[in-house]
Length: 262
Ligand code: CIR
Image 1 (tube, rainbow, N blue to C red):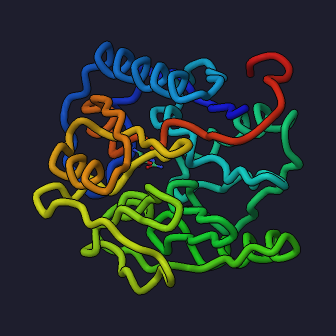
Image 2: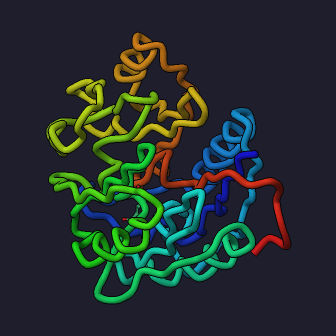
């Protein structure tokens, strides 16, 4: 089965990190409702949702994707680029421990899971203000024995690699070519975001469908024209915290949910 680890929205989300977008008021109740709708879509698409409790002291902790890179063979616990986010990894490590051998990124490496795009045995890692070459080298050393190629990818103009590009089909990436170069992804096909929707490249592929933000209808149409089934969810309040759909879950294969919730 697919397990999807999520975490309830922190009541302090208004104090989140922001890098490329201006701060706007966040409606916490609405954010909580939208997050619940997102979790309901995860369930509808076949995931067992393992929801962790909110962390009131950690404004960005709903964005669980940034704390780990989960592969079949092991999980890499990240060292997030923003110091305010480093403590988020402790409970994510505890939640993953029943399922995977854990490996930890060490200082001076920093990497956010939002910078890691896995396509089969290629692991693309964004080189951004959050993720550095030290971490990329550590990931390469850890994954080489398992046959993964680890490829550093320059990103400009947005927070994470997966703000700029995500997988939407076996060999197809949804991309904003202004923020990342297509040439970084040899052998792949591309669907470009609509030019009026620069933030539209973040789609969450589950099976052959995508969970996708309702804020990008023009790009959603492009996905549907390429026969990608789109399950839209309004995540306006999470978008104000510079997050979107991939960042709110860690999805992996496992036989069953183990142990207590963390
Ligand atoms: C941050 O700046 O770290 C958060 N406000 C947003 C993180 C979004 N994470 C993601 O896209 N993987």
